[in-house]
Image (cartoon, rainbow, N blue to C red; front, side, top):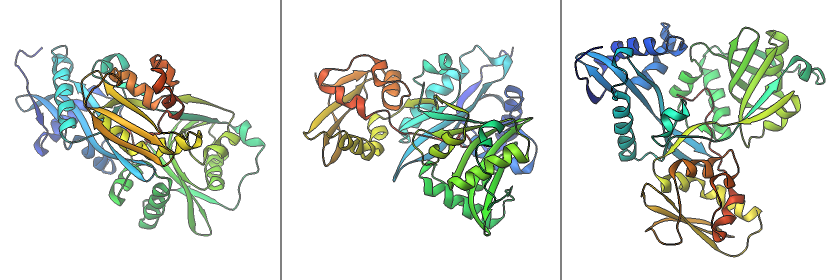
Length: 388
């Protein structure tokens, strides 16, 4: 173990890239995104360009990647800080370096105005910093047998994505039409559809692209990490995975509420519900604000007529948020803590808002606040292909 005291947290600079990649390859030896091909560099640099580091001289010994993400929530958006590639050089572990990076990163994310943060990782490790497993993702299993009852769509031509300009533009339109996942420009869309180790397939009809799917393929199994387009064209791509490529199973991850779920449920041999990612609330007001339309619509569907209000607060002492519901919609504002505020620990608040369990999982709410249980969870989703 080195006796030197690493310096940091500091932000990465271009001169740190080689040392960062060397560290990450050591910490994540099987990660394809760290491979040599040139096509992979835009994705890699997207994550490490604004990393937080601990350094021993010129050597990077601990790393925390943070990616600025704008996530579509219907017609609204929310800013989420995507955390990934968190690692420390083995000789420097057990010295609190990662704790320092995470604590510094949390404060910086708050200062930059992020509503929340998401990551994949060990619940026990990151839970003590406020991240919690939450969100809802359907897992549909497609098998050769489950497709037998369905006639193969023959009007579509399924072929690999080549990255040509017309393919990028057409698939980007399909992605944006869904209003789910990251808000992308053309450059980001091209990066995500070209991640090393994954394949993108497109279905054409009459020379027009009707659907696309990003697929991770391993031996006889395929995992669909993102898709978009028309139901019949999606069927054609899945059929190609099974009958054309010889896959024995295809797993498709999907948002809780998506028009394609009807088709996927019909084609599948079974399905299950899983947590999406680990989520941390950085700003309760900024987290709830993009979902007021969702909450208002749910309130109206339940047939509630009279006005109701609920004040929610985090135990950490962040400003409380008041939601006022009426048949006309929802208004939101920050308020000072008062006796009627429903104060909830941060990780329980994540589970309350985003599921997948019933809101009752957090414990009994006060009688005047229980109406909100039927309006939750909120629909927040990132495609697996977008996750850092």
